[in-house]
Image (cartoon, rainbow, N blue to C red; front, top):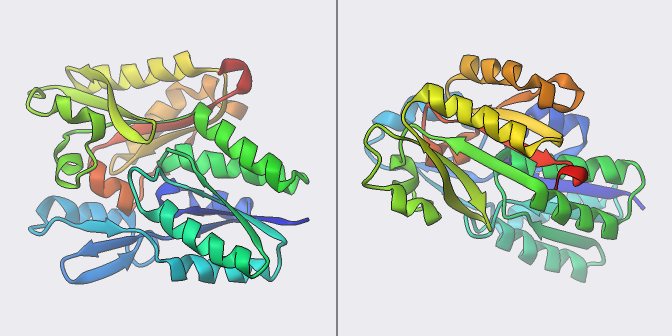
Length: 283
């Protein structure tokens, strides 16, 4: 039985990794004034970050429609027996709901589609999809794929050090980090997702201490199955971080990935972070 793996664009999966593992990525929508773009397709991350600081009207995002998911699922059903669809936290986006509704329509037509809410985002989500794709390529069943998706998501972490909470606040995605607002003069906040919502994990006094804290978090999380260093606008700094934590990366090299337009809209320029999955032995 062949199983197709689907995720959404908030996974921030680099194109080459998605292609390598035959993962279908459904784009979310980015709305800037009167224009609507497809995340990573009709608007690039670089263009988003160029426009973001000067935007008078706050950009918004929206989930793919049920019809968009149906189109993807129906196409995959032509060449696969079953589908697993792995998505961003339902507390952050309606994407999971659209996927569930589309899956129900597919089930009525005779194609099994399993939808998983990872309660994650960015490469914590992306790596979960990759691990599932590795399993299904090796002959794993749909039941095993769902179990692994839940296990991997539970061992995954998305950690972001932001320059400001402004973008999270104005986008309504501040979550449990709301307590940081108003007490952040000269403080660098580091956030993570817990049960699908943004939570503060550390506050440091400057960028250098923040970078040291990110490296410490990697060391504490090891051993790792997957590791990526994430950035919005500072690829050179991300590369430096990747080099400094390469000893903890599977294969000795951390992937460097850019946060896409949707995730980046809520974190803002200057964000640096991590997307990782702890190994079972380190869980």
